[in-house]
Image 1 (spheres, helix red, strand yellow):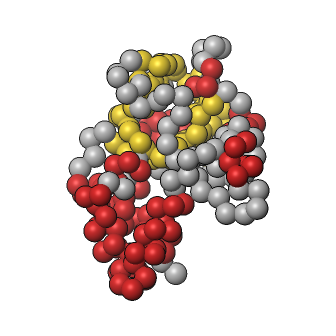
Image 2 (tube, helix red, strand yellow; image 1 turned 120 degrees about the horizontal axis):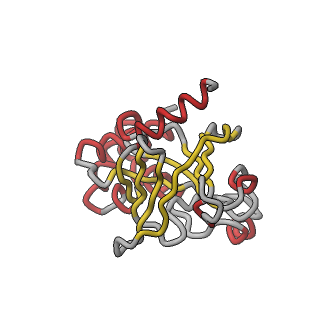
Image 3 (tube, helix red, strand yellow; image 1 turned 90 degrees about the horizontal axis):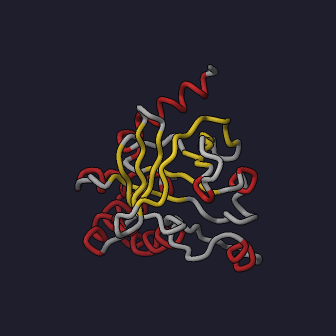
Length: 204
């Protein structure tokens, strides 16, 4: 077992739990002041509103794949960070290496065991493949080394084509990086997540 394989197994353990889409939670109106306060601390009060608008626009694109490639052909480009294929809740079970998902009504969309197959070189995502041959758009999961404990959110991609999942500005999954937050998230986790995102993108 190489060190990445061991780290991949540890990541699945650390991710154990359920997740919902990140941005609808932390961009809710009730947290706007938190964003503005964090932006103010980094760029000053007069620039805070513009900074917030810029940050939120980066992660709230509404197209991905070939549609996004076409839309952003002349530059710019925002990421679509939602879940695709009707996924509403994503669940990891590190003990059994199982990843499963349900739709907004709680109906199970998929549940498979997965094995580590390698590292994605662009963003350093851990690549997992389903043990079930017929897993459709849930065949591959590429997981960033983010956990609720470390970064207060998670980032990942999934689909049926591993090569396409390795591309960010071309192909079926262009301009898409799903972001999730624990379904058990509390105020502290949300505050920390907002602060981290502001710091990562605004601290000069």
